[in-house]
Image (cartoon, rainbow, N blue to C red):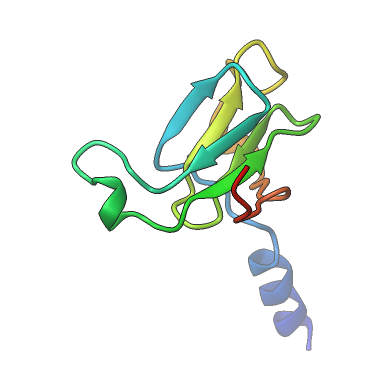
Length: 94
């Protein structure tokens, strides 16, 4: 039983890895359609609108691109130390 508890403890912590792509932005509301270098929007994902909150960044739930608010609390921070923040995503068009 002690070994099972140890295994659970070791693997229950989230492993943080840097996001595949980060984009500095100047507004708290951003959109993402998966387009990036070499991948046109038509081959990406549905456009979603994301809201950056008090963390200063938000992650796209489809492609994991991280949008960082320029001058915000996450600007200049080691991105692998931050947890995923995907709240505020919507597919509504404004």
